[in-house]
Every structure is written in C-alpha cells, then in structure tokens.
Length: 253
Ligand code: NAP
Image (cartoon, rainbow, N blue to C red; front, side):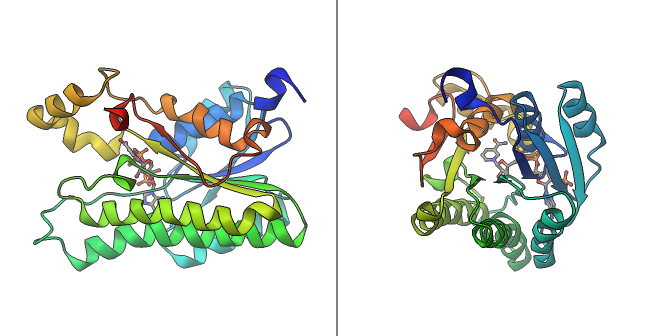
C-alpha cells in the first residue's frame, strides 16, 4: 500500500454517533469523501447529513437512537447482523452544560457523564466484542476536547467527562492494540457548532477565545473531519492511544 490509498476508507463501514449536525456531520461527509460507508447514529433527523453524504458520492444508513440510553449499545450488534461488520466507530455525540460548580445540578452532572463518557465506553465495548469475536481489525476514534487537558470555566461535568474520554482512550488502546483494534482520539479546539453557540454569542468570551488561538479563527467542523479520517485509515495503523489536537494551535500557546 502506498500513496493516497493509505488514506482511503474504500470498503470500510464506519459508525458515527451524533452525525446529524456539527462536527459529527462533517466527520460523516469526510468519511464519504474518503470512500467509506457511514452508519449514522443519533436521535434527530439525519436527512441533511444523508443529502450531504449522497452529494459527496457516498453511502449512508441511519440508525435512530438516544445514546443516553444504555440500551443503545445493542445497535452495534443489530448493525453487524443486518448490514455486516463495522470497521470503525467514531464516538462523537456529546453535550455540555454550563453553570458555576456550586450551582451545577446532579442532573447536569449525570446527563453529561452518561452521554460523553458512559455511552462512549459501552459502544466501544460492544464494537470490540464483535470485532474480536471475528478476529477483525477495527478502529475507534473518540472525540475528546481541550478540556481533556485543561480545566475550563463553568463546565465541571463536561471537563470531568472529557478528561475521562482521554483516559478511556488510553486504557482501551493498551488492552486492545494487540487485537488490532486501534483506539485514538481527536481533541477539537474551539469549533463553530451548537455546542459553542453561547460562547460565540458573548462578545467578551468570543474576543478572549479568538485572541488566544494562534490560527486567529474559530475552527469549522470540516477542520476536524479529515483528522478523524486519518485515524480510521490504514496510514495510522501503528498509532495507538494517541490524541491529536485540531485546535489552531491553542494547546501550543
Ligand atoms: P453539537 O452540534 O451540539 O453536536 C452534538 C451531537 O451530539 C448532535 O448530533 C446531538 O444530537 C448529539 N447528541 C446529543 N445528545 C444525544 C443523545 N442523547 N443521543 C444521541 N445523540 C445525541 O456539538 P459539536 O460541537 O458538533 O460536538 C460534537 C463533539 O465534539 C462533542 O463530543 C463535543 O463535546 C466535541 N467538541 C466540540 C467542540 C466545539 O468547540 N464545538 C470542542 C471540543 C470537543 P441532537 O442534534 O439530536 O442534539
């Protein structure tokens, strides 16, 4: 294998959670452009993503589920039965709740941890069980955050969940690398999406964030998609337990 084929997802079927919007949608489109087929997991309509993937010449199947429900992990097996094996899983779906830590409610703790961390673990476990049962190689890419490394402000449950995602990426990589399942993460910087709407709407926070980004701009969801493709593609076969920041230089500052 050489040249561009090392970056191709030809003949690969990849599940992406939260693919209806934002970063997950851009990941789905990037997978399609790289030749892969997408299985889109999420609770909202995938119609827009389906159109975008189709116009990129790709294939997509949607699987409706609320990922906060632990039963969502069963979908991995259902897909395996109905469509055939999955080659990769991108754990992208995530939520954030903002409040001073003295005010943060228990529900805002549980909701964020259940989706961002627990669902990431349960889906990864289901994926690995199926892949291992067939001795198939596989790729898992988790979407971490700058708040996998830093504390942040007014987002305690989110920061705890994303530190957890980084630790989980590392332990699963350690345990599963010898079974040819590569587990890695991408840590997006500040990206324009629903997740960051409140920050962009606050002129002071917006200016403070922009002034610290060496690239001088907010990231766009497209800035993340191809980094994920790299971690799904043959080119990254010897990459295990890594986290790649795609942050316009924020962490380097
Ligand atoms: P977003 O536009 O808010 O997308 C979040 C996605 O998660 C949506 O597809 C959403 O579906 C889905 N989701 C939420 N709760 C769900 C549930 N219970 N079941 C199924 N799907 C659910 O935000 P985004 O920025 O693209 O976020 C994607 C990932 O990137 C998240 O893990 C986030 O933490 C991470 N991230 C984002 C940034 C950033 O600056 N934007 C930075 C670092 C990391 P609905 O539309 O149905 O709610």
